[in-house]
Amino acid sequence: MKHLKAAVLATLAIFALTALLPAASPCLAAQPEGMKKEKVLLDTDMVEMFDDGAAMILLANAPNIDLVGITCVTGNSWVQEGVAYAARHLEIEGRNIPLYQGMQYPLRPQRHELFEGERAQFGMGHDSWLGSLGRREPESWQEFYRRRYGMEPKYKPADQHAVNFIIDTIRANPHEITIAAIGPLTNLACAIRMAPDIVPLVKRIVYMGGAFFQQGNVTPSAEFNWWIDPEAAQIVVRSAFAEQVVFGLDVCEKVVFRKGHYDRLMMTLDRSPEAGILEKTFVGTMFAKDPKFTHFVWDVIVAAYLIDPTIVTSQRLCSIDVNTQFGLSYGQSLAYLTHCPPGCQKAAVVMDIDQKKFWNMVCDPLYWASVRKAQKP
Image 1 (tube, rainbow, N blue to C red):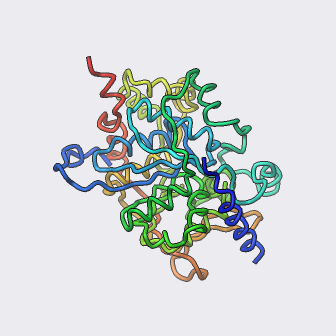
Image 2: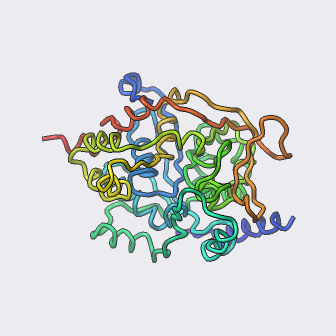
């Protein structure tokens, strides 16, 4: 695998210098033949099923989406874990979509080693989730896959580094690639630093990240994805993309995952292996223990929006930024309705979605190839 030694060192050097200075609608299910699909590049800190896993599966199976590649980054999971999770889901769904391993560490040096002191100084939010910050780094994606699933992987990721793939794909498809950025933005920040010419070539970027008009979750100020790597997040959101759409906690914490939704989805998954995976996840075990348990679905909303943009019912156009000053508000996302600091870019911050349409989509077998395969006699 090309590990970008010189390029990544250059990227980090630049960073160091700057530091010093909807329902599954019938029209989707029955598209006219030859209709042009939207090309989506999914950049993710992959986990099993909810939420990144389900987002990937919906996009992989949607008839109006061409999922051109999946790039993994450390965040919820170590990048090695994320590659293993993605590979297993692709095997189950029978989708041969290019998969790439990306950046292992956030831009700030020793982020994983020093975060406990940070949390002690700056406080903890209502969510104690630590993701990769709370686990030891696996030896490799293959080692983790064997340990997790008790077998050899059938699906092999590409040898090319995720950052190189992002650059090459955008250059090869000018003004056609939508980036679904549902994890920390380290891969994308490195791609922008290495090849700034890609920014005007991106069709649009859709994020799951930030908390603009409410408190954060992992700290009182910050949402998890952008808190893991605030420096990367600032690089990306300050880039002059043609269009930026953000699904932050402002909308994500309104879409509550309840036992009724879980039961309905489990009925949809039926005999698919995905049902067994979901049942063993944190949400599956918690719903089994406590029917009143609730959770959120975050990244799945981004996938649903890309499939059917009409799920969005309200949004606010703002200039946005991310606080990279190491202190109480480190990683906080900021929205400016009028005056903003130089360098900020406009983004549509989504506030509400049509939840009935959303859950109808998530629970539609159209988006679960493994379900249709399992139901065949």
